[in-house]
Image (cartoon, rainbow, N blue to C red; front, side):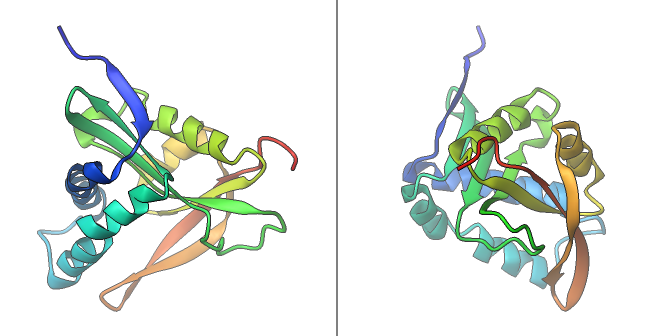
Length: 173
């Protein structure tokens, strides 16, 4: 019998599994050439450092979905991030929404997204996604995200265009 799916707030002890999942998903989505160069390796080491993730889990702004002891998906909000496009309203960033490649298409991302939207219903929710990540952009649009503008992600001296997408607040403050 297959274990049930469980969505819950991430805890500091999840950091090791989250770091592994994040690196896997990031490499699957963003490394489109033959391999990993030093800039990518440095980025992954810094962005998905277990100690930093552990500290972020203490803030309670992340959720995971797991089946038994297997981590399948993770979402992280950042209420301190400034939206790169002018909104004129309070907002929170959906910093990361990562679903393991083998678990995509099962509704896990949609569940996490709904949870994130409900965390601060009086604030708009925004994210930025690389224009080459067409599956993610399609998913967010299917979930009702609107195009709000663009921003740039820099890595190793190269600029990569990202779309800024978002949803209005669910409730008025």
